[in-house]
View 1 (tube, one colour):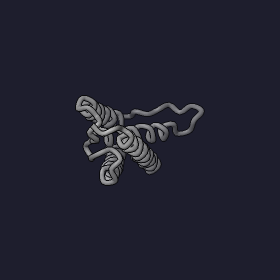
View 2: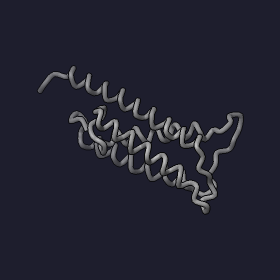
View 3: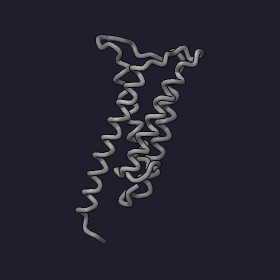
View 4: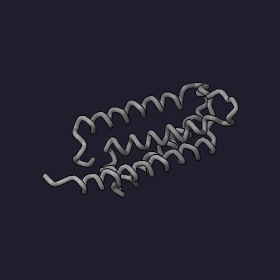
Length: 137
């Protein structure tokens, strides 16, 4: 985590990630949980993009994978988020959950991970530019 984040922000981001991860796991494994279909076919795919993108962003910002924007941290974040999204989708095939594991959901999960990593890259670049622009103490 870059040193310009105060410790309380680092702790807050870590807590936010843990709480979000628990909520996501609970929601994705709640028996028979489905979104109603309206005018938009398969609205759950948009939710998959959004929730796994946010999961990835929070993982990256939490500092668990290293400094924001660092190539190694981005790679680890993408790898962990991608593996988790595949495991999360695969576990939905457990019969007593009465849910389904399908490839288009996994593709949407991975799309969200990709968008999250891109967002982290942009944030990391912004923060590194800001650090260079700040006068030295």
